[in-house]
Length: 70
Image 1 (spheres, rainbow, N blue to C red):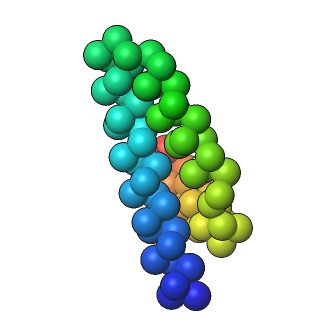
Image 2: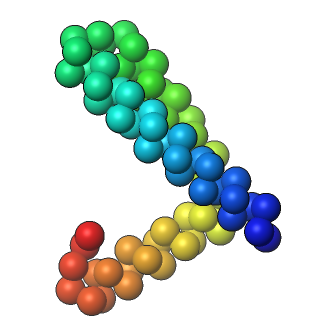
């Protein structure tokens, strides 16, 4: 379980990095690179473990119940 959590954490860091890289490339006018980063980010999102998705949904639901979405 701990190994999976570490893997999930690393995946989220990759997703965050790819998101920033895609935004930066798009703002620089390099749409081809932005598209590559976007597709790589989508692939990483698709690889999220079931437990990771469950934890993310639970945190989101708790924030919604508390009166906020962030």
